[in-house]
Image 1 (tube, helix red, strand yellow):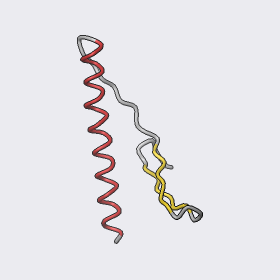
Image 2 (cartoon, helix red, strand yellow):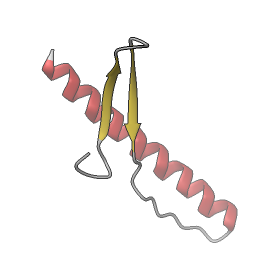
Image 3 (cartoon, helix red, strand yellow):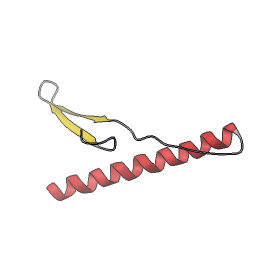
Image 4 (spheres, one colour):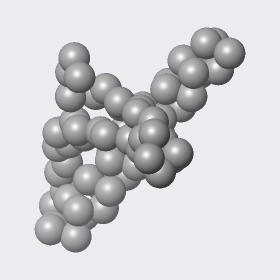
Length: 64
């Protein structure tokens, strides 16, 4: 993998299934309480994951 944001999709010949290896990026959050900071982290992480997966889906669609 070339960077922390890469999703590597591989095919397993034995199981005939695809599997994904992903090293997630680091996320930073903040809040005036621990709960607010964790909620901010949750929102940031979901946004990052959604963005990365959507980008990979677009990339795969262009290959077809």
